[in-house]
Amino acid sequence: MVAQRSNGGSNRLYGDLAWLWPVISSPEEYQRESKDWRRILKEELGAGRRKVLELGCGGGHFTSRLAPHHDMTAVDLSPRMLAHSRRLNPGVRHHRGDMRNVRLGREFDAVVLHDAAAYLRSDRDVLRTLATARAHLKPGGVVVVAPEWVKGHFPGTSSRQFTAENNGTKVAFFEYEYDSDPKDSTIDSVIVYVIRRGNRVRIEHDMHLTGLFSVAEWRGLFKRSGFALRQVDTRHADEPRQPYLLVGRQNGSRN
Image 1 (tube, rainbow, N blue to C red):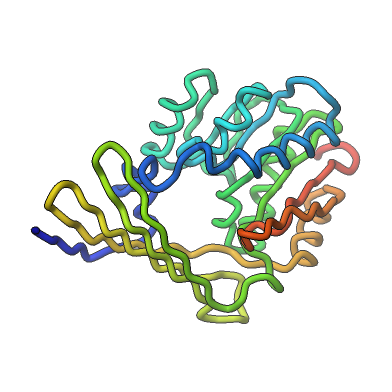
Image 2: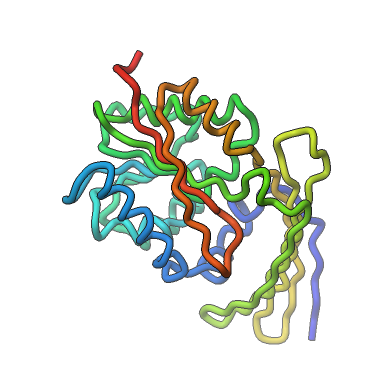
């Protein structure tokens, strides 16, 4: 057996390692939580097929859970992740753009931000992204955000591991998250991928920096952005991440 080791880098899952996404994740993993989102959209907007903009769609697995029920438009910054999503969701409109400043010149009933919310690492990131949502919402529209962790739920360190296989590629995934500076608003994440194809094994390293805010901080940022916030508890017994969905409804007219 031959093993190769990489030097690593940052955010490689959205760059040169994006090809791993269909191996380590499947659309079916999002089925249960997507029911929460569909229920909330129905509660906020009423029954029926709505126009929904997803910011930070990544590889489109969550998109695929909403697309059968709503008219989806998806935005992401990574061309390689967008390519995955386009293949999986051929009926969805896709655009490359940064969720903090993209402007499509269209209005939607709802703007949703799923896993990508983790990459809002500062007040400025959050405010700019909520401004993007507000710029694309029809009057009475809503924005739904899913922070991966919130202060009070992150235990200080967290780790997870699993194995996955797809089309002859086997991956062992190891992630370690830690808060290197409790005074700031970020968490560090170190990921190791052990990739096996036949008798060849590669070891790849990745690092991500993600955001960590309290619910009170989120509430204040929503208020500054012109949204009234509703906090929905969506904790599941087997998954401590994403304990809440944050639902913002516009206050008054847009600037």
